[in-house]
Structure formats: C-alpha cells, structure tokens
Amino acid sequence: MVRRAGSAAAPQQLSLGWSREGLVAGVDEAGRGPLAGPVVAAAVILDEAAPIAGLADSKVLSERRREALFDEIRAKALCCCIAQASVQEIDELNILQATMLAMRRAVEGLRLLPALVLVDGNRLPPLKVAAEAVVGGDAKVQAISAASILAKVTRDRMCTGMHEAFPQYGFDAHKGYPTPEHLQALFLHGPSPLHRQSYAPVRRAAALRTVPGEAA
Image (cartoon, rainbow, N blue to C red; front, side, top):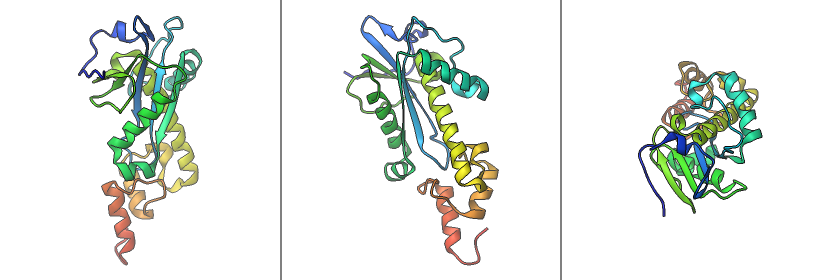
C-alpha cells in the first residue's frame, strides 16, 4: 500500500536507515529547472551504525562541502543508486514524468530492497514498495538529504562535461539554468543537442534561428 503525507512527522525516526519494518530509502532529484541536460535522481539507504555528520539540503551546502559529503555517503551508506532521465525523455514525457522515471530507476537500482521509500516533494513515482512523499524532505530526512547531495553533485559534474563539449554556453557556471548569461548564449548560438527542445526559451531560440534576419 502506498502512503502519502505532506511532511515528516519525526525527523529522528525518519533519518534512520533501519527500522522495525525494514530498510528506509531516501530519494531526491536535481535538474528540473534547467534548460539543458538530464534530470538526475538518487536513492540512498543510510547505515545507522555509520552516521554522517552535516547532512542537509544540498542547496544550502557549499560546493566543497557537497563534494566531501558525496564521497562519505558513497563510502558509508548501506547502498545507493544514481539514475537519470535523458534530454530526449524529458522532451517526450515532460519534465515531471521524466523526473518520476529517474526516481523509479534510482529506487529499482538499489541492491537492497527497502521496506519504505521517502521521496522529497509532494508526488510519488510508481514503485513496487511502500512510499511516502515528504514536502521539504531534503531538510528533514537524512536519507533524502543524502540523496539530494548525490543527485546535485552528479549533475554538476555532468555540466562540466557539457561545458567541455559546448563551451560557448557556459554550462559549468550556470548548470543549465536560465540565467541571463545562458539565455544570451542560447539566442546567440541557437540550441545545442543538450538543450531541452520542449522548453519555451529553447523553442523561441530555435525559431529565431530558422527565420532569416531575425537571429540574435
């Protein structure tokens, strides 16, 4: 039976990887808002016998701290899995469904079967195990915090590779988000194969490139 809830009741309990009922996995994603690149999700089952200090929402941590925690999570967690949905899948399914797909892939990729999956946000991917949505879970549930860090660091590293392939867009700086610098480059050079063609700014930039005399 799938359980849904708006918030975590007791962070001390939900932070544990073990419970009477079994293993608890935390799930979060990174990359819903950018105009380019995949959306990345991670699932983590922590080991209460190997606590990790300083877990928090990845967005409030420095890049250096995220990188350090990334390695510690990978070393100490009972298991974890990082998955993604591609740009093509985002364009075909829409970003919400692609995010759910990436989350499902992350959970299904765990080598241990969780008894309960806690997902950041207010929506759940289709899963074969019990799951609960936790609004603000990346700040309330340690396993979700760990998942947010794995997803964020992984996607940021992908953006470094994206920058090497297409340096004119500055992916290493803005990570694909629609900053003024990114939008300027997008309209100047037109969309790259890494851009999400279903997103409005990308469609507009592509349309301008097809009309003679109107390209920026």
